Image 1 (cartoon, rainbow, N blue to C red):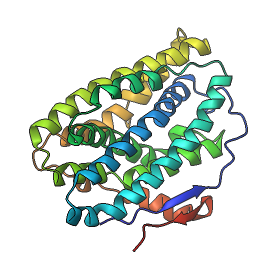
Image 2 (image 1 turned 90 degrees about the vertical axis):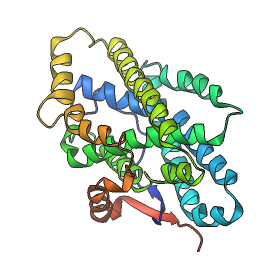
Image 3 (image 1 turned 135 degrees about the vertical axis):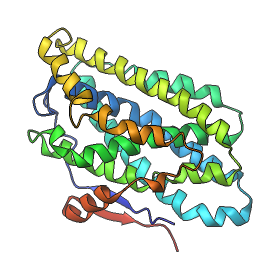
Image 4 (image 1 turned 120 degrees about the vertical axis):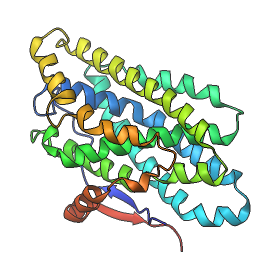
Length: 275
């Protein structure tokens, strides 16, 4: 069992963000902003799915998962709050969040269904966030050094995503979730995640006035598909989820542990699961 500590990040998210905060790069900024736009709705969905999954377990199994679920909810609620502040700055810059409302409409399709459906979707999304998080922790230079508080926000968030990547998956299995459902939801989430990320990034670039600049897409292709690029390096980890014997713990979390150890001055531990 992993101890999931709730941390208060010691950064000021009230101050406005520069328009191209991510290394002065329009594409990287638009892409990271797009991800942030999905988080408040997405993380509430994950919280609800995990909470409902815990309630669906028999009492003896609830005891086993109670601490991890408490930590998971605390971490995700903190992420949701800080990214809501982040997204407020984006709104003031004239960007329009279409991803969040679209995800909110989509989640209503799961109302009234077996709790394992939402857990399978959550486990798939958590796999995406975990592999993206690991890549970011191994390539912090992608965030640049122009806005260290935002870089700290992303790396702290990435570390905690890596930390709690097993919770939804383990609950799904504890409830008897099978491989067929898991893979069905993984295919759906892959489609939704990739298309939503692309649509929101393009929207951000269009409203930023940089969509049709050659430099924007040259940067985007390098960032995603170049040597060490996001898609290029995370593809093997994405494929791993399709194995019948897959478990999130099979993927290395050392980069997250190292970041939390090295940057303990950037946060305060405000809670830990009850004994």
